[in-house]
Length: 393
Image (cartoon, rainbow, N blue to C red):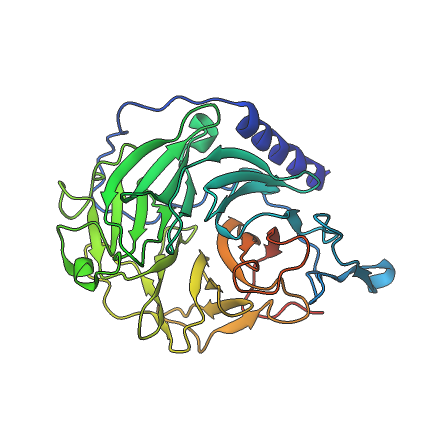
């Protein structure tokens, strides 16, 4: 009965997305926020329990539990049909962003180069719900996605996109034309990616690339290379260090993911730099990012992240699997990252991540962009929370 209720809740959410229409508010909520903190995820119903063990081998097959605890092989995908029960969307272009919908068994997946946002749910073909015109000839395109903090009421979704003239934040609801929220973020020959998250007050956090100009990241008058904090209309959010500026922290080069812990204790951003890949903890009131919380000199291509109270998981687009960093009580990390989903039970290259609840994640693959795709790639997949260890085969 519990599993049935989860599917019903998710189906209702997906049905509203595909058929509903929402209006755009004309003013921000005007909350009087003095000190902002990351926004807890809304998880009214727990997500589905992924099949563990599971996952895909090199040919797309894997194992699922059988009678008496024995393992039963999962057939490789046939065309766009994937027999892995954790896979909820198939045959998409590489996914730069995903967002879990209320209920946990469905979500949104964003294709970087096409500008399409698709609703994904197990047993159904991905359904386009919005297409935003993007310019994806560099590393930009549609790279960020976040639900409105009041999504169940307003059905609004925010996206970070590269256009012919700039990088910008857009928002949309099914039945409405996507509308600009914040425009004029510098665009350059490289480092046009941007990512989104929501903080505790309901403000939108926007991490922007430096557009190929490293000096812009340290310029407080530029929107490039920054973490911005805005309201639903693109105005500086109440509680910003400078009330007239959206900028809260500078120093980014090429962000790939941003995530907040469910309890509001921390926010994190990943960054690909010339020297190393970095994970930073976002500290309110600090003008620059400062020293990274963790650094990868081998540059595996850090991308999306997922934050929990006890660990931070980071996807990598140049190295198969997910990096898992266990948090210590002191605020640092307990030793080196462990890697999961990098072998027989993996899904190849993973770029996008979002937390469904404290037990499950929604991820998106980028195997068509430098990986070894199977016939059903690229895919949206529900996986269990890493828990700092490797799933058993």
